Image 1: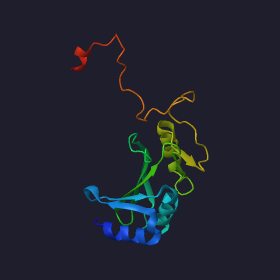
Image 2: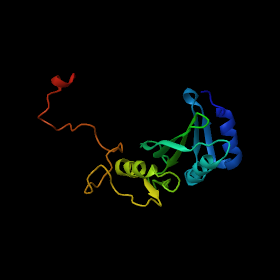
Image 3: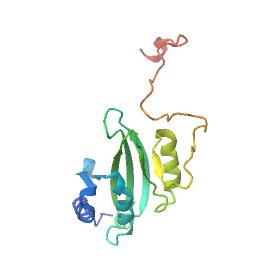
Image 4: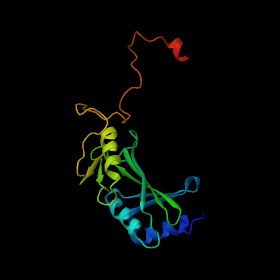
Length: 169
């Protein structure tokens, strides 16, 4: 089924509604990707879900990304949303600082965001303001770090029990 919506039309509609909250618009691989100001992300997602024309009502995925060398934009929250009615997909991104990696929860909009936000917190340390139970979900509660952050060496160079010949090096 072909979509009734177009990337350009949806982007224009969101820009018209939210103006400067839309930081950038791209279409890699023909998928509408919009960067939204972090403090406006909740409002944008709530609006595109309730808008009678767009009907983008399904949260497919949310997850974090760590860009340690991108000063002031060290973390990204990425949301993939889908309109079953219009057969349309959109990707929204918001960048967060290392000093304050937090963004509003979507649990009041999507029940399914609960687990995904807890997983993102567990692995990246991104805080979701207003989340009803933001605790670790997969890692041990005693962990004092977030394993998906690119802050740790991939290998321990001091290991003596490893022979690189067996690892193709």
